[in-house]
Length: 238
Image (tube, rainbow, N blue to C red):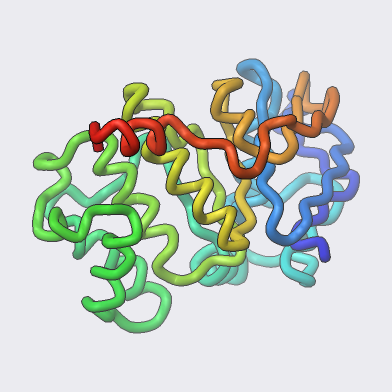
């Protein structure tokens, strides 16, 4: 079953064609990576998939609904209810604790539930850091709070923009371990990345060039491959 279909998607800013007649299908439960050089259209595609922009031409069908012609408020509702966003810059509220940052997502979706938010932090190994402010957390811990926030409303799609871009090697391994477990549980994941090692975790990699899909490659990484974080745990380092 397809959860996302892009058909003939183009995005034009003045005289610039950021995307041009892009076709892409993502199956439910699939893990897809999107790569390409600067200016290739990665961010534009992410914004369209994430209901932050509407294409100039073409159609987008997400979770059985054609969404490319919807208005801003309708797109906001879909993004809020069905998409879990993970950002390179984290976008945590500085004066709220890790727990409160997760609960903010609950507030805009339905109602807050502290126990449920704590469970989300526990899933990413941060229950004991629930009362810490962002400045009291490492970069890797802040990204894990961002993941917990993205998961709290049980999204149909997890969309991650350079999720390891600001992390060192150890924390990159921890984050990729979490995403691997989520994929193993059936989550649909799309990761925009410049890092070939991050892309290799996905089942397929879409390569963009000048607003077009250059090629789609099925990756060879075995589904049960251990991540760097697994290896570190086995060695007692985590």
